[in-house]
Every structure is written in structure tokens, then in C-alpha cells.
Length: 206
Image (cartoon, rainbow, N blue to C red; front, side, top):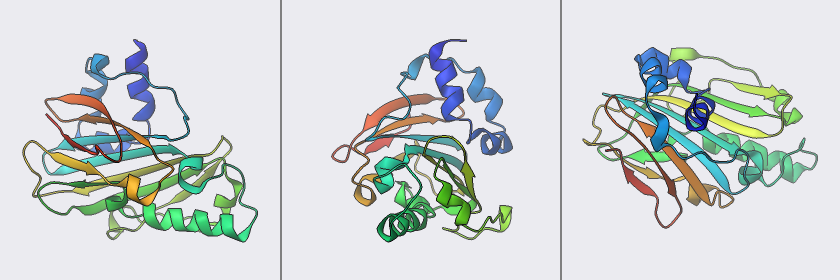
């Protein structure tokens, strides 16, 4: 398996369960991933956004060092740090914090926020609502033993997507610590990758 294919597997590891629901996971992993440039993991200032489109269904996966979002990567100790963590959760619970699609709004079918490596995450109520989650509501919050990475997943219904889909990455205006977003995307016919910044934050998936 090539390095780029291994990277594709890595960044899709939280999105694949949802992609499997759409029937896209085997197709994605069987694709020639040569178009995906390999990037170093856990780089401050850099986040990864994965977008998988199948008809009206969209799977979104976001991965970022916690430092980019809250300015620290350890257990929150001060009230200011705890408030920053709570504020980040509240923002990330809504997909429009990450991106928007040309053609109209999307409905949230399923969502998950995972924070690994910050013990304070254990203080959050552990919730899972599956298909009953309302728009903008996170289904679960997990804590893990690894260093601090924030991972967010959404499964969306977007009945009015542009063709080909156009997306605008909006995370920059909410979290200034995110300087570059490595966008990786796939549809049932195409795939691509690009690096986006605040002044160049749109992409057409074609």
C-alpha cells in the first residue's frame, strides 16, 4: 500500500463508518490515491477536512490539533481554559462552523465530536442520539489517552447541492488558530485535494 493510500485510510478512519452507510467506503479505499498529497500529522496551524459526496448525502470529517482551536493541549486547569473548551464544543456542534455548500442549507442526520488526550473531556455528559439528533446537536463526546486531537464528523442531507458541488470552508473565521485546511474530497466519480487558507477558502468538487 502506498504512503498516500495509507494517509487516505488514516484521515478517513472516523468518516468511514458513515461513508460505509452510503456505500462509498469500499470505493474510496479502492481508488488510486495518487492525487492526495501526504501531509504530516498534528501540525499546529493546520487542520484536515474530508468531504465525501454521494447524491444528496454528504459525510464531513474534520481533524485538528486541539491547540488550533483552544490554544492548549493539556487538561484544562483555569476557568478561562474550561470556558474555551466549552465554547469550542458549542461551535463545532454546528456544521456551518466548518463549511457551507452552494445550493442551500443541509440537515444534520448524525454527528459526533471526539476529543482525545484532554482528560477534562470526561466531565462532559456522554450522549448518543444516533438518527434522532437534531441539527447542530453533537451526539457524543469521547475522551482518549492520546495527545489532544479534535475530531468532528457529520452526516448531512443536502437536497439542493450545486452540481458539481461547491464548498466554502468557514472554520477560519471561528478559529484564528487554524491557518491552513487540507481539504480532501471524493464523490462517486472524482476525488481531489487542495490546501485552503482564509483568503482562498472555496473549492469546486470536480
